Image 1 (cartoon, rainbow, N blue to C red):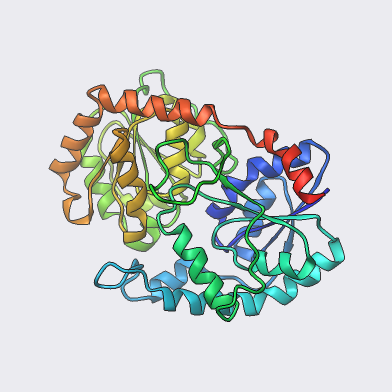
Image 2: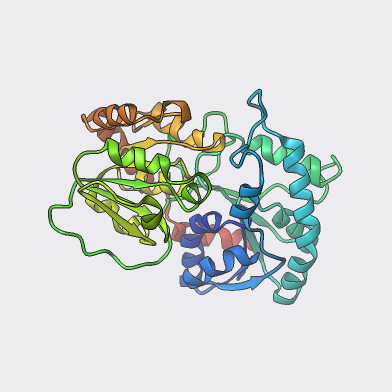
Length: 368
């Protein structure tokens, strides 16, 4: 079987699919990632073959040029669907032809894609093959986004936008957004890229891990990270992209900045995770059974914090609440025991999901 993996132009949208790609390869199937240049390096580091189509998307550059840089909702809180639809249409117009050229030459039996990769269903329709949809994590707007995309990309008739043959959901039971159409559970296997496990001193255990993802400091600066570090007591590990240590300047005693170290290589040292609300960070910390404090710096990052708070496994501080004393108080509350028990329950739910390898057989049947 040949499986085409397609992803929107963000490396973090590929990483949740990587364990399934590995399972397919281990079962003897061929996997090819079709992506824009932004994702090619991440796919290569994961050991996957790549066909690059289109030009660089440059997400950070685009967001820096936008005003405000983190705007993802209208003033009344609604989603700017018409703006999104124009972006989806432009991307499909640009990439459908080159992607079809690759696919017709390679002849896949199945496509697996992330929730924002709308070239995939159009390509699956053109090739008359099935495709599977792989969620990242909590997906509050997923059903409406799909409906809006169908309307925008098919002239309102639904033509050329077939429903997925399978929808994989890595969220453990209880964490996913209420009301979202049910998906098929797939175990979230932590993968945050490749790297070396850091050599840390023995005293640096039960640390607080702070991770604001790959874009937050680049877009919003290091001020919130500095405030967070000042609020913490005891050993702190900062998992961050290269350049963060220089941007921070002097750091408090007990803080270790680890640049370009995969989060999954440090969380066994930690008792708590403070992060920006990204799906990959949330589900990685969930798999390790750790309580989480979410400090979102953009409206679209709030949903993971809301769901963690609803389960009792985490807390959420919105932008106007992200002050040193509030962070310190929230951390103290999360370390009292109840949040830890709720977090371990979510981890047990994650471990009980079917593994990516368990889904290879069903995908073989879907692909015929």
